[in-house]
Image 1: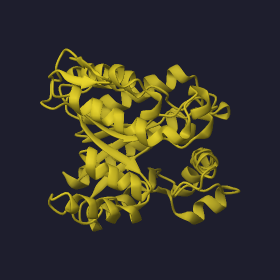
Image 2: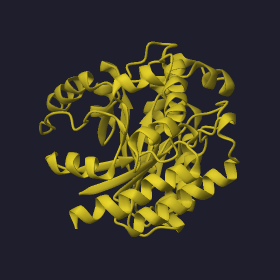
Image 3: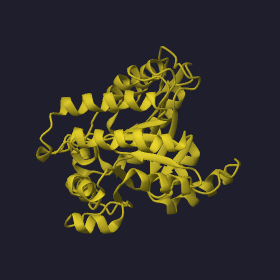
Length: 323
């Protein structure tokens, strides 16, 4: 059985937590998880969010890399249109060396209109900017000189990992899926239905069939000794998480599992957020073909002590069942 952590660092005012304390807790959690065999830690990126959503994933992963040894890191997703391609490549090469090759990227075009206004980037430029970022990163990660905007450049040092971090594309449309097949190392769809366009394009380009979509159903699980009490404690933060994403994604009807809901009862009915007793989770994981426990411990501004309580239950009562 494997497990992973995800962080986006939403910290709404009602959470009553200093951002610095939330960052420090996440670093402690990363070190804890690495010691227990965590295979992947994921961070995300958004900008100008009222709840303090993480705008700079690279320095966060640099700090996590310094506290860990084995866990791999993923930026999911890095929003390409807001980055200078060369500076981004340099920062990622440094991160790749700091982590000794433990970084992977999912690059996305973005969708939040307020972010594009903040950076003064026209949304119609998204495809061009994504393509330039991906092509620049892949060229820079070779460690060799390459052509960039009509001039010859050479970024140093070279990545630690030969070829640098892997670069996949995220997306929810047919053009994004086909673009991923042409320019990236993989595709991570936010809408599983568009996987078949990626699969078709990969084969049209003469490469092996990547098979069925690797994306499973999304959902967040937390643990509590008393599941009902745990739900009452955690539900307001799950609700904030859901409705904050839902408000963003409703702007352009982005294909996503997130839609705003009126209250915690409606949220519970979706089944996307569940609070389980450890024994229930053990039973569920043992029934899975490939058991994987995925935690979003600070979801929606979750209190740090509540987040740790869930993780400690996983350590004491779930992991030993797979020893």
